[in-house]
Length: 231
Image (cartoon, rainbow, N blue to C red; front, top):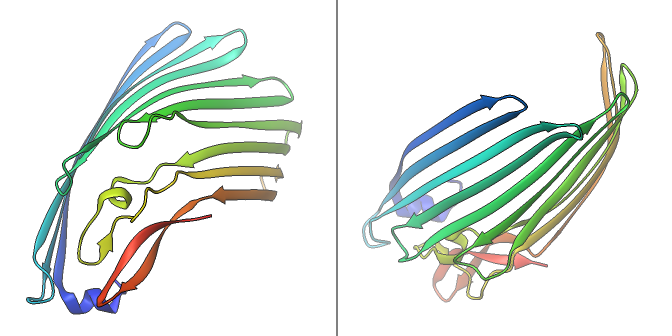
């Protein structure tokens, strides 16, 4: 940690992580089904120099299960998915449950390839809105070594559990409800590649609204980091 305040306060910090990730796949004619399970446990401990702050240990648990289906059909390859995951932390008596439904499609011809995708997301601890990710990617093959491409993505970032709830000596949650960060990106380019050379020329544009950042604040004798929105 490069912050001199933290160096003067904390004698040491310790982080212990455990995780499990498993995947099962079933293959059928013209389709594949797969499930994925993940679990992560993280324990973070601080041992500060006495009289500056108290010792503290926090624990976070994340668990989730997802299911995907991949289907070959005469229009291309279609992917459908469902994800449910949960998150809880020892320092706040609440939990976050995330529900997501995903759909994607891929079409590939002799000269063109088109991919598109959509996801609908709901969080139990934030508000009742459904948040959407959407995007596409288009490739045109001029010849065996040259590809023209264009992509667009529109997404979001929900404030994290820490940004909404953390309350330690050097980090505080926001005074007001943090807004969702929204993002849009465009990308255009050309790829030229053969056995001897690869050239990628790209033009891109990114725009974000209500970016979530940590700001260092001073209030009376307290100095701490706090999550804020940048318009």
